[in-house]
Image 1 (tube, one colour):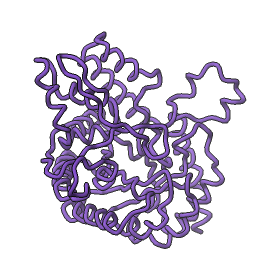
Image 2 (cartoon, helix red, strand yellow):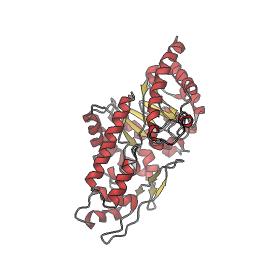
Image 3 (spheres, helix red, strand yellow):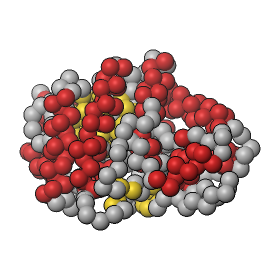
Image 4 (tube, helix red, strand yellow):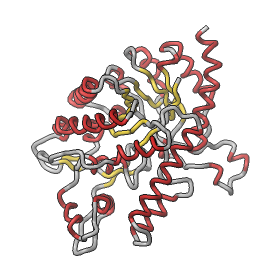
Length: 380
């Protein structure tokens, strides 16, 4: 069984990213200094996960502001009004435009409001809502995902790049003119995803993670067909690339057959928020698809219930075999505090109940070690 992490907190154990961002926005540090803070945090987080024994370590889960906004910039899905930022000052660049989209731009004779922000499903995280027009010409416009993959390779860490899936990205956005549906842009979007995957594959990527949280929503036939088209196209173009599709925050419910028959190598499900989907999923999962068990709660600070988690693992291994089972948090650890060791004011008794992101990585490894011994009994 592989130990699979879906994402790690960006802010830093000492809230370094928050402090650096605010210092940059007030002009106290340079853009280069801000980028160096980001690079330092990525390095720390990758090395921490390697030390914890995680097999599938994510990259491109880091963001200076928001991962959905990152993807909009990558795809050049930038509303026309923000182009003025680039010419407003001789030193302005794509990062200035990025922050203008996130926070607005009120200087250099411009008064441009920020894009809409809304909750990321039922979490306290907020994302920047993409804006779509019928004839928007999308293109690959950022090297962020490739640069961060290469950064990790320089450390000797082969990461699993993370991308918000094309269908969820479109469904999370809004049409800004009448006469089309945002899913109509999928044929324009898929060639760009193919360019991204081609470069990642050439650089040595073995696994790529596609987040499709829309699978936890009520989907229409058109939306389900869009998922089949997207991942059928990717599999046809990249038959040797290992693809992990993740869902979280709820169960698959009526989407269980759709998800379990998509052309992907592995499917991740949230068994913390919706454990009752498990039995139906084991029946529906098509061979040779692997199953990533989201059994470490990625949304709160409490320690894991090992006995409950082992029941899922043993049942999955008995049905699928250990080579088709992964152990993972329910969702990205983005939603958890970083390091319990830094919380000095908590009583020892309380701290003994808690596990922050750093400790949750250890829980995945501990659970793996426990399950290996227990699985032998199940299989024999």
